Image (tube, rainbow, N blue to C red):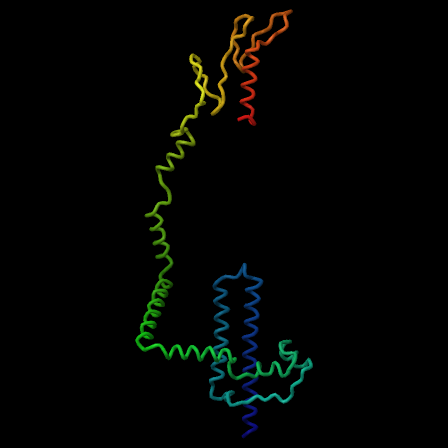
Length: 270
């Protein structure tokens, strides 16, 4: 009878190890895809991987709940040998995760209860839950259920309905002002609404068509060349030809106007 139970236990352990190995391989493949193929990974593929892992875990639960499977809770594991040195066989068996079976790691790997810190947190939560009265707890439960219901309703709504609502909101709320747009186009294209800049000094009368060259700069006026043929020459206009055999002389009035105009038009003197 005892030998039969031992064989049944060994068969159950081997089957459980095989199922866990399948879960481990599936996890390795999924993690590799997330780290190296995330650019090509699609959401349906992620759901398929989750479905595979869920199915494998359900298979393990069914195996543990099977009547033919012995109760692992009644089995006790006792470390027979502890060695602070590296064990190559143990490292190979655990895929280099447990290279040493010493006094430091045995309490962690053979622990049957949570850590003391986790147990203390569980006690605190249990004490807080006991202090809450039934009415307050019922109100909190109703509030949580309402939030979950609203969230599920939003998630279950078809995507077309959400798109239609967003499109309707965009149509009802224009993102621009037509009057401002028309004023901007008129100002850029035709100068509509722009103020005219005039120089601070008075403009000489009797010269139509001569406007200011730039804001704040002096105007260029025509001057009469004295001692010549009586012709008028403007800045930038044609210059009267000189008489043959006479050296050309520039009157002092022209020199003064040219100096003042050139000094004010220099970009560093604006």
